[in-house]
Image (cartoon, rainbow, N blue to C red; front, side, top):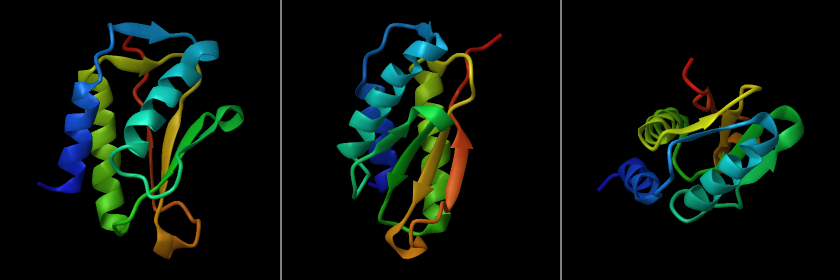
Length: 113
């Protein structure tokens, strides 16, 4: 099973009541996202940067797989109806080979309007 499929399964296992969080509560979603990612994909602890509205992870595969991880995280969050309200939050992905540079970045799902 591909590792990005494992992430999708782990995200689907998170039971979340459909709720849109206000900006001040968006960190709760970020915390939950980090918990799932730390237990499935990340090779270093997930980091939350509230000031810049970002969740940062470091994964083992290369940049081309990082783009797929972004897509899988976005899809899993939408499927679980886990949205970020207010400011746009982003998922930033680095790999060991990138020297700390972001190789893929994507917006986390916003509350549907």
